[in-house]
Amino acid sequence: MRSRIPVIVILGATGSGKSKLGIEIARKFAGEILSADSMQVYKGLDIITNKVTAEERLLAPHHLLDIVEPLQRFTVVDFRNRALPVIEKLMQDGKLPVIVGGTNYYIESLLWKVLVENPVKQMKVQGVTVDLMDEAALEHLPSPQLYERLQAVDPDMAQSLHPNNKRKIIRSLQVYAQTGRTHSSILREQRSADGGSELGGPLRFPHSCILWLQCDQKVLDERLDVRVDTMLEQGLVQELLDFHRRYNKERLATSTEADYTKGIFQSIGFKEFHEYLVLSEEDRDSEKGSKLFHVGVDALKLVTRRYARRQLRWITNRFLCRPSRQVPPVYGLDATDPNLWNEHVLGPALQIVESYLKGWAPAGIDPLPVTERSVKNDLKIHHCDVCDRMFIGDIQWNDHLHSKKHRRMLQRKQLHKD
Image 1: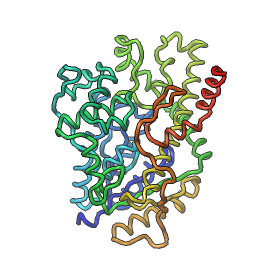
Image 2: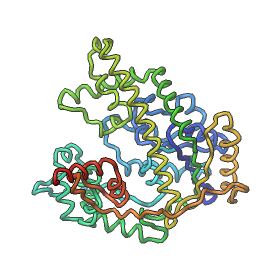
Image 3: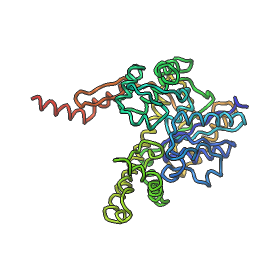
Image 4: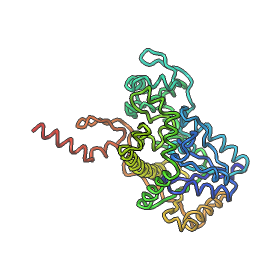
């Protein structure tokens, strides 16, 4: 039975209706849903992370929600290792896995063979033996020190990473410590395998398809603004305040500045409302508090719209611009008008899934075309002497060279020379 069961992946910008479609598909075909969201794995903050409600969870079984304590370290490898057994079990039982995403790299970790196991060994950095799984110990080491170690053991990988990207630098050092092989050599091996590409290894589940919920950008922006307003009505600020008192206040008492790069504190909302959250109760009720509250609301709406755009760029770049990569068929579904949901989204989606369950190509519904990117992205470091900044990859580099900021700096330096 397993070979006939497809893996269905639902993608789209935040606010496009992914959770709704996932539940409808799971109910129709006796499937179960896997959330591929790096913030929804954490317990708490149900409003700001936009988790499905308790009532919605009763409509279809959901996996990988609320499985990690808020301050617990949880990596993409941890996610993959938790998610793959769930998918395998569902397929063995003849049930349809429906992956709803979510977080880009979480989805990629399931679709493609692109990761190695978590390391367990130690390594010497600047003569000091460091437990590479001890996150606290690693955070105390400066990025230049870690980067220098990576340059020594894996210069090819170092050349493709920004010296300040501590998370990826640590990851590559961990791979070397565990396997005795460089991260770059393992990636080259994956890419050269049958079905591999410049982005990694072959597809993990060849019998899979992607449903992409598309939406007019202006309509989506308006929808996201309304969603933020709805979250506020549901108690978003109180949720952040309660969480701040329980987990963040103590952290701030021992640190000069807030760190919103770890655990659930990476969620959109904390950073935007930080100035408001740290006020006393009296100050929150003052004119200053009101002003900071509205600044937080505007910032939250802006960052949410920007996040949606990043999600869309990722879908296009990873799935529709890589002819050399094994990519599941991507079917576009127009979710712009909620009144036409059944006609434009649900109906075609059910037809596609039913066809895949029967082993047929969907009649009258074609996947989106895949085209070659016009710009290659050689992942090497570029340094702009004019702006004194570093960029990884040709795309970032070309974008910077044509940016207004670079041209202004160039003109300014030219004036000083003259």
